[in-house]
Image (cartoon, rainbow, N blue to C red; front, side, top):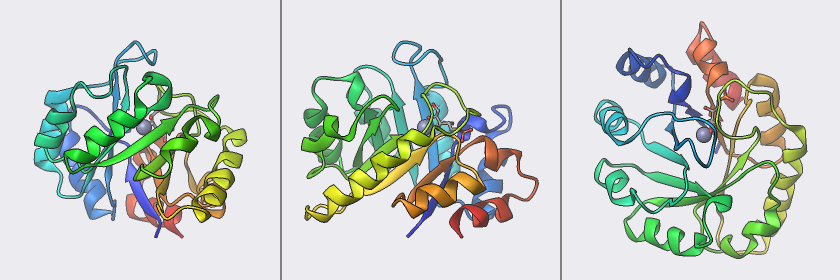
Length: 214
Ligand code: DX5
Ligand code: ZN
């Protein structure tokens, strides 16, 4: 089933509470929270206290996307605030398998994220264990960028590897997702669609969310 995950990075930080309620009323499935450290990516977004405030306000599940080095550093904080899904980048740690185990041991779903430059082969040996794979369709760090078409073939590769496994991980895409690119990624097997600028710029948010799902 296709789910839509608004990225709150595209929200109005002075009225996130209202944005959360509006997106929930419009049919959002899960909120996507982008954590950037200014080191792994050339931007800083927001941190633990803001996530805690979002967690208190939101009534749908939360998906935290760590664009940070040392992805295990704040696992307990995210667990304690009630985060459901936690992903980190394969490029950010030599101990990805250990991080997956740690996240899952805390009762959260663990996801492995891949930058546009990174091939599926780099995470092949994690695919029996992860709950989801996050294919970045832009270079992480900023909202509002254009979709990178060459990332689509990785979705096909993931789908065909998944057919050989008992672990049926979800496939999430993030970056430049709008009505048109959603069609493409769904046709290639993605079922969790993150969308920031497209959804937040839409006048009719319910229609925009349905357009991504249809
Ligand atoms: C980019 C973030 C994305 C971003 C998506 O580094 O990971 O989640 O907010 O924004 P759009 O949909 O505008 O590309
Ligand atoms: Zn993201």
